[in-house]
Amino acid sequence: MKTIRYAFWAVIGLCLILIGLANRDVVTLRAMPEALGDLLGLSPDVQLPLFVVLFIGVGAGLMIGFLWEWVREHRMRVDARGKTREVESLRREVKELRGSVAEAKGQDDVLALLDKAS
Image (cartoon, rainbow, N blue to C red):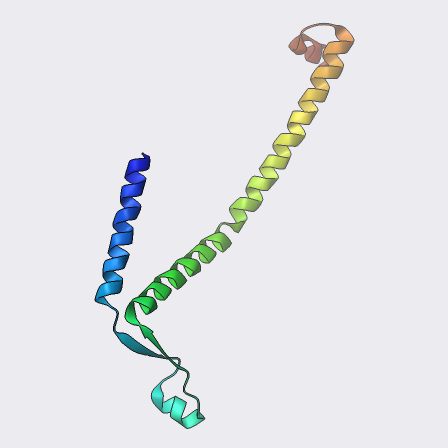
C-alpha cells in the first residue's frame, strides 16, 4: 500500500514539475481593471510566473473548499458531541446500577435489576 501511495505522490510531483516548466513565463496580475486603476491613481500590479499563479489559485480554491465543508459540517459535529455525552452518561448510570444492585443482593445483574424494579 505504501508503494502505491509513493507512486501516486511521485506522479503528482512530476505533473507539478511539468506544469511549472511549461508555464514559467511572467504574467502581470492586476487587482482592478486598468481604467479604474488609472482613475483612482492606484495600480496594484504583481508580476509572477504563470505556474505560481496557477498553484496559488488551486491552493486558494482548496482552502475555500475546506473552510466551506468545515462550516457545513458544524451541525453534525455538535450532534456527535451531544450523543457522546449522552452515551457516557448512560454508561456511568449503568455502571452505578450494576454495582449497587448486584453487590447489595449478591446475585446476577439482571435478577437484581428485576428485583429493584418490582
